[in-house]
Length: 420
Image 1 (tube, rainbow, N blue to C red):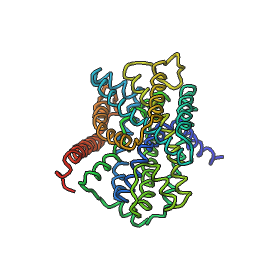
Image 2 (image 1 turned 45 degrees about the vertical axis):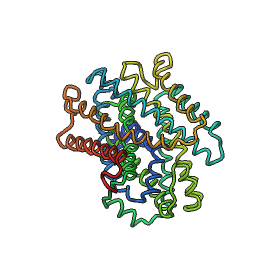
Image 3 (image 1 turned 120 degrees about the vertical axis):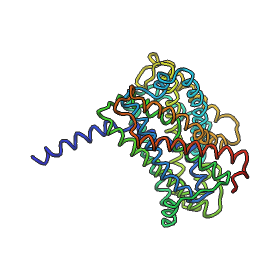
Image 4 (image 1 turned 90 degrees about the vertical axis):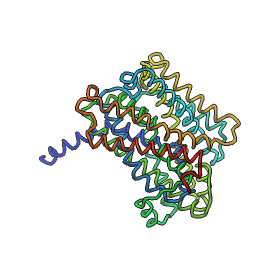
């Protein structure tokens, strides 16, 4: 009897955790979308294991950024766009939302490109797969409510394990993988710098901060549950970057080793077959499909949340179309545009997909500065403002991202200036 009494507090905490968990894991895992998988695949195929080292620091940065976003959402009960409008005015809000719209539309197009590419591997035409997926993700959000929608997203998050299995089936030299993970490496070659920043852009994307905070507000998570939401964020950040690492490992162990370059994640899945076995290739392709469908639902949702919050319109998945017409109208428009562009006779979207990830890396410092201004507002956050150590780490992250962006611009326009 005494044992069960001691067990009760643990069971209570576990139930609270299970009730709270979701926004952090979903947000982080959606970040491994079609564009992200393409980026990691190209990174592994072209540069081997050398980019694994940066994922350690990117993970730390991701935890820092996501924790601040989650704290803002839990304490204020509002989305990031709403807070930016209240604290920084309409001009700043309009500028940030305009930037977000451009980046998110490019990202949404890349998700449907991932749907088309993954299904073509199995012999299914994009003219069937893309409209079908577009309709299904539209139906999920428009006809669903927050709790069942979140359950579907959590199930989709679990399917990223396919990439871990693909990486293991590729049979990499684990000693070399470990050395690359703990050994710093960098090159001023324009291509390396571009993929370096693109990896950052796809791992810590601007849309994530808007979606995470909006979903926390929509779910109604309170301050008393903040410790559980923080754990949700940390677990999500760790799992998403472990998946990213295994995508790089799978492509480095096969494509890089055999000197085989790729342009898309579809190329990677097809090429893995003869090099790592058909099971690795099939799992890689299924992972791409899952990630693309998952992200095709989330990216438009993130955009609808941000725009509606920025201008004071009703925004919630649990509302009806009549209660939130602009919210669902925006979501529908992004689905139609994203899917419609893919159905046009376009030869290749890889440049646009990689460019959207690079754009995330360039725009992220703007979003981070806004978050830092808000998180240090004592009238807004009270005792939950950043401490000195957190501020140092946060500003250091922003400064590094800005520095890398400057290097990207220089190497893009003047390839020989920095050498390499």
